[in-house]
Amino acid sequence: MSTPTDFLLWVRGPGFDIALVIFILGAIIRLMEVLVLGRKPDYADPRNGELGPGVRTLFTRTLPEPGSFKRSPFTVVGGYVWHVGFLLSLLFFVPHIELFHGILGLRWPGLPSNLVDAAAAVTIVTLIAVLISRLNHPVKRYLSGPEDYLTWLVTFLPMLTGYLAYHRMINPYPLVLGIHILSVELLMVVFPFTKLMHAFTFIIARWYNGAMAGRRGVQS
Image (cartoon, rainbow, N blue to C red; front, side, top):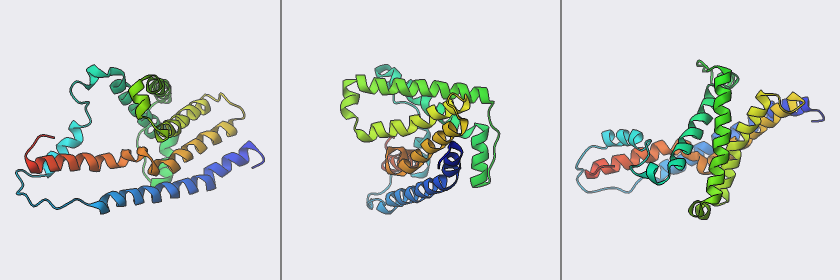
């Protein structure tokens, strides 16, 4: 990798293949861990069904708990903003859609590039603000460990480097594009082994909590 072009070719080829294998195998292993654990048998007579309450909880837990916005409005708003902005940038930027099409064979309509660019800029600013809030809030700082800062970093870097690459703010272009792709691959490698895995497991967890509450006849 003596030139930026060689570096770009490596991260787009062998580097991406390695990251993709680690991501898929890691995610499968983590999901199997959750599913194999199962649940203890409940011998009590069910007071209600599990399916309806489980599905309902998938949606109700997406909304903030009553009073949480009043207690910490920035945490609630900031969390929604950066999650939505990250997903818009990931899933609706046309070059990203072409990448997914090459891997999965699926394609869907993208958003205008200027809209995705604006979403990325807002997400970057919000992620920085979220980090500052964490560092300045005594309770958040006390509860935060190395993994929390690692997950923030590997989430932030693809957004930042993607923004720099889109606007060609670093030359030569193959170098900044390669750095962006490498940061995404770092996210892919770290993803299954950190709290980021909740992007997959939250569905299982929310359904389970709702189903168990429904079985016992209580509100989840």
